[in-house]
Image (cartoon, rainbow, N blue to C red; front, side):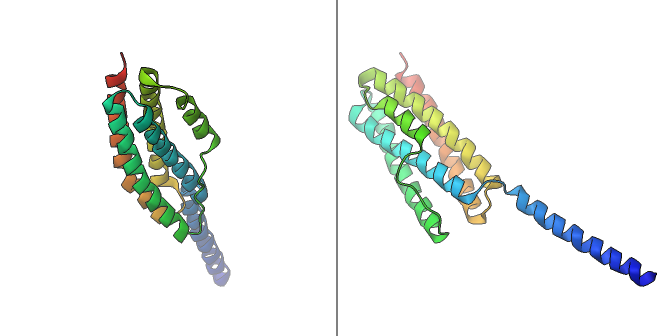
Amino acid sequence: MKKWSIAVMLLAGSILVQSCKDDDDDDFSMDRQMFVTQASSGNMLEIQAGQLAIEQGSHQEVKNYGQHMVTDHTAAGAELATLASAKNLSVSMQLMANHQQQFNVLTPLTGPAFDMAFADLMVKSHQEQVNLFDMASKEVNDADLRDFAREKLPVLKAHLEEAQELKVTVTP
């Protein structure tokens, strides 16, 4: 009878340990590839919109912010691509459909209309990226990608604040 009780306790203990292990895995609910795809597309949107701002912006602040986006996000994109490659994850060179639609709104605009639409897009895009990176820093199922997201989050928050200030500057 005693051996039976010990066997049951050992079995229950191993089930408990296994269930805790499974619970830990469930804590990281964001897929690695999903994060890389969304992050790289959002990053490319900010680079492409920044390039457009340099060419089509009418306020010098818009052109400056555009250059800032090109510089910062090109570096971040290269860093993400290196990390993703080391993990056999793919970084698409095309915008996701929602990002392409957002970019397409900008392309025909010029002058003050462009400046306002660009500032609006930069606020919206950076809000989305801050939310994505915040979630990824806690939920992506890869420690290196969580660290990357955590490291980039303060920069994205600063970009968001700058975009909000730019929006005030270009709004009549």
